[in-house]
Image (spheres, rainbow, N blue to C red):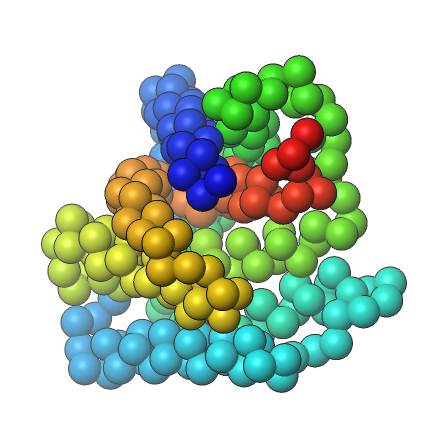
Length: 254
């Protein structure tokens, strides 16, 4: 199952990235989205980023040990989403520092609705490619219908703060390292960050090897993000492809 899921993910992200490239050529003034922010290469800034990453890991471990907001009842999805906002808060707060702002997390300040609209269209393309790669294109309409539900608010919030954290890291590492170094280091850290959760789930070591291709996929995605300097278009794509891992969205035995 893991191998086929990863191949479907490759198809989904591949078509979404191709779609982004086509839009970027059609609307050449749209990207880069956020203004370029220069973050000082100082011990203080490096320490703040490292402290933020450590804080995310620490809060994530508390979450894994059920030290979190209760996510039951009507407001369960929102509360669960807030759990993830809290986890990523140690790094996401950096955009509120003086002279940094939203642009230092690649949040653009113009044509926001159009960018999100592009992201939604690319998300539909990504799901279509994922489903087609699984040989179940006849189920596409039903799978798409299962995605935009209130119960998925928490996943959308989680992916939003993950993508913001990625933007924040890339901006800072891009100022301190080469562009290539920033992309490679962020890709490795992002994939490695999923290992503790997989181990807690009891994922066999053989299946953890599938995280290695994830590094290659992350390199492609992060390269596009670095060129676009915009996380808004990517958020819907990332969200819907994350949802494909859930049985109630994409039943494996169907």
